[in-house]
Length: 159
Ligand SMILES: [Zn+2]
Image 1 (tube, rainbow, N blue to C red):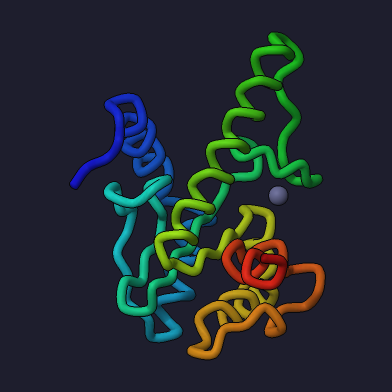
Image 2 (image 1 turned 90 degrees about the vertical axis):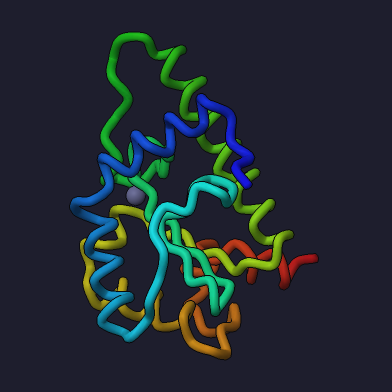
């Protein structure tokens, strides 16, 4: 089943082309080294998730800080021209990301978002992945500051 519009499909394909480098590759290598096998860029799921572990019902997104408007120091500033355009675009991206996470969670997936800026610290990345991929993954596995990263577990705690 393919529930995407042609526009979404285009976006998915475009993101795949740009994603076989850098941050996503770093995460994939680490997950693989931890002994997990996964599928990449699953188009049939909301948001075309980057890394899908079907047996574990777990999903990892690797978000670029710029396009997903992380707002961290690493994210480049929006171009000086067309400020309104960029502001609206980033707002749309954020809304769409949130909708995708909610849809996946409701569909029974646990979802982790890794930000590009987080992949620069190997030890941090390893601990976040290990906490998420543990069979007994719980929100309490995470340091307080990182709990935002796991959509489903935060939802579990507050709902
Ligand atoms: Zn960032």
